[in-house]
Length: 253
Image 1 (cartoon, rainbow, N blue to C red):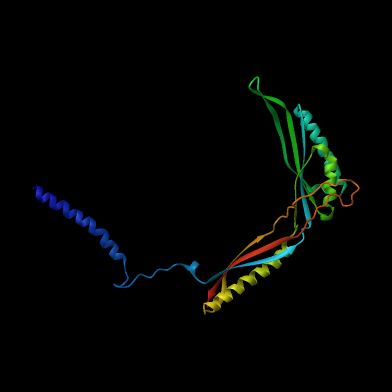
Image 2 (cartoon, rainbow, N blue to C red):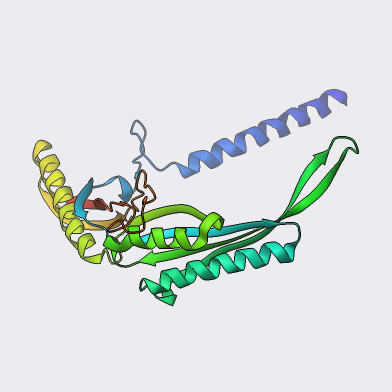
C-alpha cells in the first residue's frame, strides 16, 4: 500500500514538471534550428543626430536685486527704519525713470536677534532685524550704474546690494537665427554619416528642440567715489551667447 502511494506521488510530480515544458513548447513557433526574430523597436532605426546653433547678443536690460535692512530694540522701531529707507530708495529709482511695473518686492522678513548669556545659560533677546528686498528692472542698460548709485545713496547704511544681472528682454529673434544654425548643423552631420555608411539619407521623422538664454552676472562693480562722476558706477553688460539645440531623426531611404 505504501509503495503504491509513493508511485502516485512521483507520477503527480512528473506531470507537474512536464506541464510548464509543454506550455513553453506550445508558445515557440520558430522552426527547429532557427533563432527567433527580435524586433528592437523603431527607436533604434534611422540616423539620430544633434545640432547646435549659437548667436551672440548684447543684453538690453539689467536687473538689480536690492534691499534695505534695519535693526532695533523693538520690531516697531526696526520696521519704521526699514520703511523710511525703502521709501527713499523707491523715490530715487522713480526719479531716474524706473517705472512702478519694473519694481517688484521679492522678500520681507523679521528676525529676532539674540545672544547667549553665559552667566544665566540662556538666550537673551537683544533686538529685531527687518529686511525688505526688491527687484528692479533697468531698461536703459547704460543708466544701470547711475541707478545703482542713486539707490545706494538713498538707502544709506541700510542699503543692501544682493546682485546684478543682464539679459535679453526678447530673445525670440536671436533664437530664430540660432535655430537655423542648429538645424543646418544636424542635417550636415546626418548627411556625412549617411555618406560614410554608404546609405541614402531619407526624410526627417522626428525633431525636438532645446534652447539656452543665459543670464550674465558681472564679475564685480564698484561704488562711484563721487555723485558727480558721469555715468555712476562702472558696470558693463558685456555680451551673451544664445544657444539653440535640436535632435533630428532621419530615415535611411
